[in-house]
Each structure stands twice: as C-alpha cells, then as structure tokens.
Image (cartoon, rainbow, N blue to C red):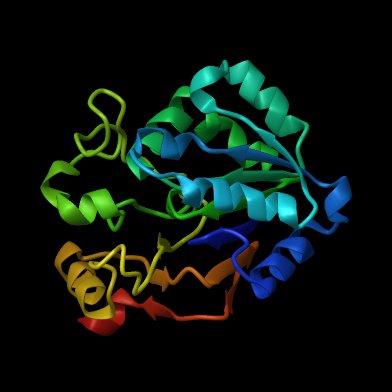
Length: 234
C-alpha cells in the first residue's frame, strides 16, 4: 500500500512533494476522489474543509467529490475505481467509521489500494491505524468507547469505533495545536500508559505527514512530530 497520512492535507511544499512522489503521475492526469463525509456532523465554520480541498485543486489535481451518505455502495465503488487517489478528509472519526462500514469500504478498500494511493487528513488518517482510542472524541470520553463496532461517541445510531488497520501504528493528528489542547506530549504519554497500547503512536502537527510504502514509514515534516513507543514508557 501507498499512504500519505496528514493532519492538515497538502499544507506545505514537502508534503505536496511526497504526495506527488507517491502518485507518480502529473497532477493534471491524476484523478482524486475526495471523501468529505467525516465533516458532516461538525457544526460551524468549515473554512478548514474548503481549504483542504482547495489545496488539492491548487496543486493541479483533478478532484471529484464522493459523499458516502448520498451514494449507494455501488456508486461509491465506481467513483473510487475511476480514481488514482482516495483522499479522505477530517471531522468526526467515529461517524466516518460508521459511514465507511455502511458503504462497504472496509471490504473494498484493501483491493482498491493495491493500485491506488490513500491520503488522509486528520480523521481520514486516524482511521487507517490500529485503533481510534486516541481520537479527540475518545480522549474526551474514553468510557464511552467500549466496542469498536458500536459506541456512543459519535452521532446517536451512526457511530462506530472500527479502524481499517492498514498500518501497525496509531496516528494522532494536530500535535500542539491550540485547537486541540489535549494533544501534548505529556498527556499522550499518560494516555498510552493508562490504555496499555501495543502499537507505536505517531503524533504529528499540521505541518507534518507520514509517507508509507509497504512497511516503510517516512516522516515528512516542516514542523513538529513525535513517536511514542509503549515499550519505552514501562
């Protein structure tokens, strides 16, 4: 698999170059299917979502939008099959998990990604890892997250905690962001200890990304990031 996991999309030249390298085609000949679904339950100003999509367009890529809630699983499949990149945006991670399951993506993405690039922003990156236990909603109310197939953290009746498990790590976006005050080194290390996690945690700020090809992980950063190894916290 080829993946680009970001907090904030194509937020700088280094991340944009890593994305281009993964794609391996000129932007004007690259079809990007953008999934904005996770943002649907977030209220208020959505400049961040508009900016995320505009940066992809600004770099010259051909962008189609596939909304999981407005399409049948077959329609979603057809759009993704016609794309070179599946780009999943941010928002509520637990709502995204539910909608991906309803659209059949837990079954179809592994095959699609044999020949396509997956790129994620925030929730779209977190869902690729081994667990959603460090997602913002879970950090605020970890007692509600008891079952990965159903939980009460997202919208009522439309919430799941299942992750795609594409990579052997846990991704945590927005390190040191003023909008996510619980995403700090000391707080995350305490959480990793208390939850007895088995996989390394990569916490990245909005200027950083993970470029993953097969089992190789490269950090692309013009900002700050950290790796928390649970074994090292014992």
